[in-house]
Image (cartoon, helix red, strand yellow):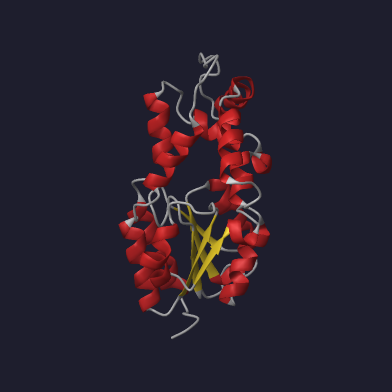
Length: 246
């Protein structure tokens, strides 16, 4: 248990995509199935360059949309690098490393990204209701999102997000992205809380591990199991809750 893990909870921080709105990974999975690609092939291709990929640079606001689409499309269709990364992924999970992988792909980055953003326009009702439940009880609530300039959630900010969050912290504005610990600490500073006084929700493991390392209570939101995450947060609140404002 990290130091301070028993501190009273005063704030809750939410990821957006896959948590407050439906997961863009649903669109990726559908695209893989439709194009005969192995499961998680695109996700592995997306993450293989770690912090230096086009997707990650776009989330930090470092490149334009057109440059992103061009570079991302090239990265998604680099079958030599992607197949190498995918075989390593299979080996880590004790899956069939002898699987036949594509020798050539024609992944359309523009189409895929548009479909991902279409999914991200759909609110995740159980999580939205949890945020309202927290606010009614006096907890500070923030969003911490790796996003894009002009992405699908922009039109939701005034319609939904302004009502839900005390602070809406964006990677494209701050110039940092999860899992960089500085990004989490920036949100904590805005909320005027210590990390040990925060519950953090995300759908991605490495983002959750970074939060846990800082001392936050990390709760994973899985597709189709959102109600379980909601109940996990409520259990933490009942055991350790102390609203920062009333």
